[in-house]
Every structure is written in C-alpha cells, then in structure tokens.
Length: 279
Image (cartoon, rainbow, N blue to C red; front, side):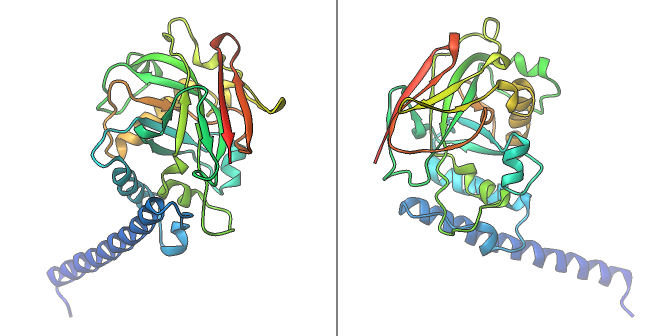
C-alpha cells in the first residue's frame, strides 16, 4: 500500500502533467492565432484546437497574442465586450469579456477603413474613458475609480471578427483572439465633472440610413460599473493600467457589420464622429 508521502508525490506529479499539457496546448493555440494575424489570414477558433480550453486559459492565450502584436509597446488601453444580455446570448455566455487595445489601432476622426484589410469589420458606438492616474490594485467602488479618470469621449470601435470557420465563435474564441480588437476612433475628451458618461445616446448613420441607436446604460447597466469591471479584469490578467490609456466600455445598441460607405455617429452635444469604409 502506498504511504501518504507517496500518494502526495503522485498527486503533485499528476497535477504537474496536467498543467504542462495545458500550457503546451495554450502555446499551440496562441501560435496559431499569432501566425494567422501576421499573415492577415482568418483566425482559427481556439476551442476547436483545444477542446479543454477554459476561460482562464483563454485569457492566458489572449495575453500572448496581445503581447505579440504590441511588440514591447504599451497597450493603447482596454476594451469590454459582450456587455449586454443580447450579445452574451449570441456568443453563448452570461458574462462580459475583456481585451487589449493596440496603440496602432487608434485612428483619427474622418479616417478611411478598408474592408480588404479588416475582412470581418464591424462597427460599434461606444464611450471612452481616459485614465488620468495609474491603477495598480483592485478598484473597490465607482468613487475610487472616478479619482483615476480624467476624460470622457465618444468613440467608435471597429472589431474584426474574421474567423476561418463558418461556425459561430463562442465566448472562449472571442477572449483568446483578444476580443477582435483591431481599430478604434475616439472623439474629443471632456472632464467627467462636465460630461456624464451615462448620458451618451449615439445614433449611427451610414449612407444616409440610420443603422443603430444606443444608450450608455446598454453597457452593463452603468458606464462607471462597466469601466470598473474592465479595470479589475485586466489587472487580474496582469496588465497595469497606465496614464493616458483608454477604456472602451462596450457597445451601445448593436454591433453592425460594416459595408462600404460614409458613416457618422451622432452623440448630440458630445459631437459627431465621421469615418469612411471602402473596399
């Protein structure tokens, strides 16, 4: 009969094997996503490569994928996704997801976006909050978060959901591929003392037709709570939150598949963001 020490050693060895196997599998998935991104090819569905993939594993893959694109640079900020019950249902989850914004994805208003470069391009109207002072520890409430935010702005997020499979991506796939982070446009920032992020009510018009309207509270019911969730989630994944970084808190209304044409997002007193989509 094995003694307790032998049993303990066997359990530790077994757990180490499982951990090593998971690490190898996650490394394989991350490399597949990175290679596809660099070749401008459709992304794989990570859960089909690793059928044992978990949310924690998906975030570990995401970090490797994001770091490969950053290539030593600091993130431009962070984004929340699936922040409404409707979007969560579409991707088979009951939780939001978070990703890393690449600094080279920041475009100026009136930008031109090419469908030939972003084949799975979608359009989302959002709110951007700007970090005024670094955050290093879990944010316990909205009052604490507000002390770190120095600006609120209208924003357009341009996620690229370009996957190799015709199968519907699941939340695990979305997380591991960095929540489709590709490009984003941010308008003028104003102090949160004079601009309440929960007042946003954008309308998206493309080629003269209104395609979407949304309200700030579409994102987890409250912009500040959405931003707090995003900050705490990315801190948990090992990302420090730095001055000047942008938080995109989730789609207001629906995510709209992009088509060629001229678009503008009207945020009322916040201003309008125009952009162009071409083939």
